[in-house]
Length: 243
Image 1 (spheres, one colour):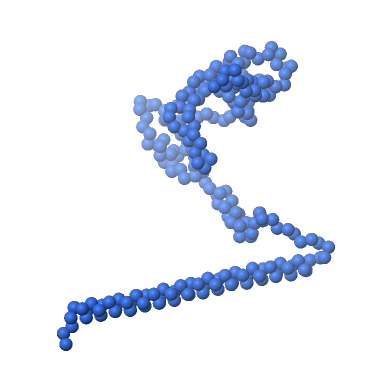
Image 2 (tube, rainbow, N blue to C red):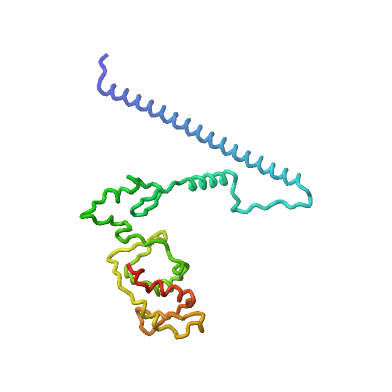
């Protein structure tokens, strides 16, 4: 008997149906095993929590009747979390910072070449000029003097020798960004010192009035302590501090 094309096609369809049915049964069986495993895990967790609660009750019952059980707040850390924090602190303490002797840059993952970073090492010196970020190019600010430590924002603005104008935007995630040009204007800080009272010892504080850039008739008052400011005036107006 000769097999026709229609018979072969029907046989092929039946085989495909059998394979699809087998795959479906396999998927159903796999899903059942997964659900069964989830139920077992959930039951195991519930049993563990129940045993933990029972142990807690037993510990409370064994304590003295006059003593009160210790209350655990929501911020109480578990032993696993405490161990994790301790490991983090140990790793942070073991971080080795590397220092470039030219630019004084100090970061953990700094690749040094003969004691200098790659940027300073491969920088070309034309006609014996100093490195760009070296002390010879006057790029090391040095230590902050004691007279300039702990100043408030308005006190720092009073001794700024340069007034910077730039456009700053607040980005998502509480971060700031800027774009466009950055312009630095020289600021005369010696003129302010000439308007101080003749007898500063009679005052404890100074009231500084800052004029609004939008409305010339509006001022904002700031209070600064006079004695710390008098100590930092000679340093800020000295020619050696201008760079």
